[in-house]
Length: 234
Image (cartoon, rainbow, N blue to C red; front, top):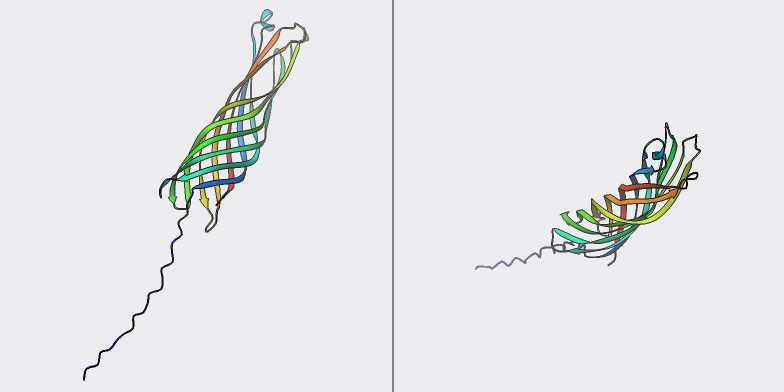
């Protein structure tokens, strides 16, 4: 007599659904870092040219200091490899520097400072993993720049000049960075480098003895490295 043996099927455990991180959406965050800025300036007096030839005073200041602020942006994830978007940030700055020097015509002191700055940039990134993005970025920079100077020259005439001027200048920003998500959360961390070029700041003042104008020109640039945290708004 034959017996048919029936073996019950053993159900395989369900495969857990893999959660794929999606970069699309608004985000907001904060950052802090350090800068290695530079200001090169030239001041020129037409008055000394009447006696000793043209008087040109070049100087250079290193604008090192801490920076910190916040950022806001939006990402679009195009596919599993590419993400693009925009970001705007605003930074407080402790960047300032001074220079001092003397020559046969007198002694001069120049100072420069970046009081604050911000950028508005586009970002284009490549996903090396679903949760890690490397990107390039570029766009507009703006900031509050200050230049000041004092020169006591020509002891025979006793002529001096001094000036202090603060302006908001526009410029460019370009850089690169890496950003990665904390596992299972909407939080990301990032490290970023930016080079900022604010162009030139210039002006004139009046010499105390002759009443003639004294002109000056300064060019500002900045290199920053900063780390930050972002929260992607669901």
